[in-house]
Image 1 (cartoon, helix red, strand yellow):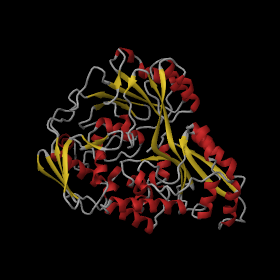
Image 2 (cartoon, one colour):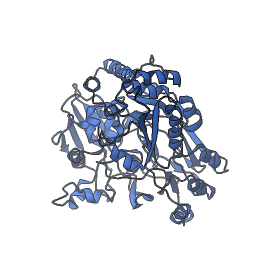
Image 3 (cartoon, helix red, strand yellow):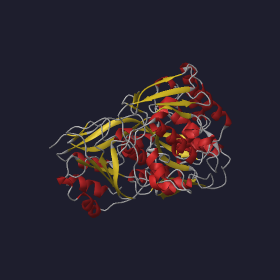
Image 4 (cartoon, helix red, strand yellow):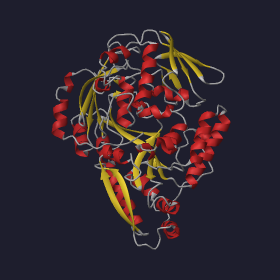
Length: 521
């Protein structure tokens, strides 16, 4: 999911942070343009938060670069014929960062905590899991009994991060039975790295856990220093000094060109399954009118955005073709057509009332999103709109998304799969139970769409499920619930010494620093 929280770090502050880095062994410095809002596995829900989660914590499973589920804390699993009972056998020898063993009771406690707090990814399991659904069979065996068929269940297990329940309960209080205050400020997982320091909004440092169950070698990374900034000059200065190991994938094109020209750097380019949308509030004027939504879609200069401002591939609907069998190949991408856009404005219920006020919200400080906002204003204002640009810090955007009356008509948002299933694109964005989150700024609340999403979730017939997903995508495109701008083609500046970066089709799982190597002495 790319969702950018803006916070600037000056070059002076960055230099202070990095002082002495050359003396540390295999230390990498990573630029992020979004703050780490939380590291609590029961609350994380965006780009940087999952970047932290995948390094600090482990789940029963993970996935590889093809999207296939792989064992992690669980060495194996089996499911009942009806798909309702899942039994996982834990790997022997995996330990938490205090050296204590990972046991089935920790899995049970972690899932119960997620459901009780009811934040982060908890909504994915609404009606599927409850407090009694997960049980300890023995210390190495844990069983999940689902309340109903949930076809994507296995694909969601990589985000069911496991916490050290004994350590957590030592820090629980009468008013905080799930130790939220403690877990907000420290890592108590079995991940490859532990939290060493965290200056909120500016920097975070994680260090390698020596006892990590997958082991280390001489080229492994010992320490990761995250620098949070959207100042292009700071990122270029870090590269010029040789301190930058990896940039974010949200820099200006000029920054990539500048860093790529340096002898010690390369620019990694790779396709993704992350989409860039104009999320449209379907329940607030004027985008409650489908003709207005279609007008905005035709007034979008897709080619200029994709080729000049933000590299990407054409996107025909809510989901890119990464799940090929679930993708309808008969839906065509829209093209920029101001005459058509003007016709839809004239056919709307808002025609003839003077210029139509419409807000476009985007992340303050991100140059490319400002450019896209200005481009949209230049076209929308010629066809009957009074376009109001609304730059906001990411945390303010997520706050405004919590209420239908404060969610603007148009919102620039990245969203990618949070688990490797088509369900991730549809349930999280368009189901009525997802409203009130930045992922669901559409406020769609359509019973027919809900029924289609639920039908796909509840069928174990893969062909029937894929047919539902294809029809669902056609329906959402026909209703123009969003403007589907592009599928991101990512770029990141990488130091020549940093190797083994592999993109993974799940939010931020490519930033697993245990799998990367620092190959220079």
